[in-house]
Length: 120
Image: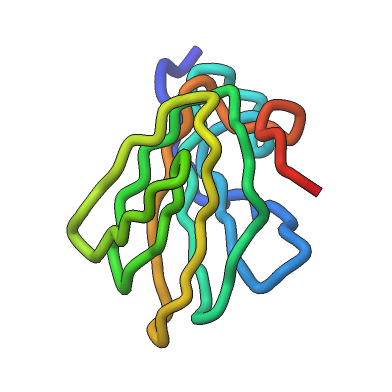
């Protein structure tokens, strides 16, 4: 049995909007329960609802920038920067800027629709 797995075909997670999520490892792609690792692309003007996730989320912005609202605070995270959002924080990710944003997300435990707790 191999003790490694090379990901060559990440799973596209449906979002219902223009954001692209490619999950390389996690619940959606391979039922991996250690963490989830995904590459995201957010077009200008994109935003998602507030959420109260039951996981810690690390984001690393590779291109562009993101606006992250956490518990009433606003933070701009630019290319080359990263941020940790602790579980149970009220958070909203958006890209109100005029440039496409690309970032990576690592969730511990892994992201799932049942633990993200998105507001309607």
